Image (cartoon, rainbow, N blue to C red; front, side, top):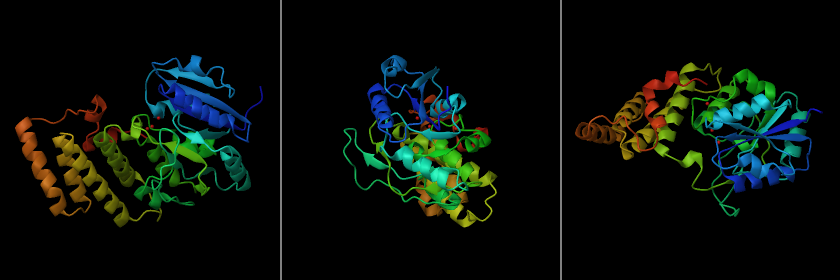
Length: 324
């Protein structure tokens, strides 16, 4: 069996109709030297049976439910190609996506990872205006720390980069991609193809929009860990990083308060102030969280999920380098 030029990795949890649409977009590619690996992350639907006859001939790997980071890492382990392309099961590719990215990789040997913007669409496939972030190319650590703009379904890169970085951090239920791109950005320039060649489907079941207080806490901890551990070599200035951390921790504190997670709200208020947020902004949240916590007792429980209870800001060191 010949080795394909690129391995396309698609993690999925249920969503069979959307997965079929994603596979259809792969089948429409003008670049055809690929293999498709679908990692079924503990679906209750019969994913393998549903897509086994698809013309992309996907290899379906089933594992127990472990989250998108573990699913992507399993796909990397099973991949045969030296180049990896990622696609999420609810997103779509433009027919020229792989051709354009493989051409870019072949043209510039000094750049081993490329990405690009995505065009948002609604659940029916209609364009959604005004929901894109500015993208940047080159050494992007500073810009990336301030804005998460590298989209997983656009990334095409050499496999050795992912292997060397240890893949996605499986302790993270969200932001595992952000964490990985930040780590890679310290060592690699990112190539940017500015034309949108992928579509992001906006719908209510997206993991990134479930339990925002948990997601914001994880994001803040990912950024804090990166800031405290990394050697930036001039790519990220401390004043810029601390300003970003102050804002992210403030937003995490506000979300935690709204979700009844008072201990976490207090901790993030204090962190936000330590990074430079004006106390006049954090004090109202801090007082409300302390008073509400005193009335209700311990706030370590969360209405989101058991996972959220394990992600207090003080536990950052327990998050080793880990989405769907």
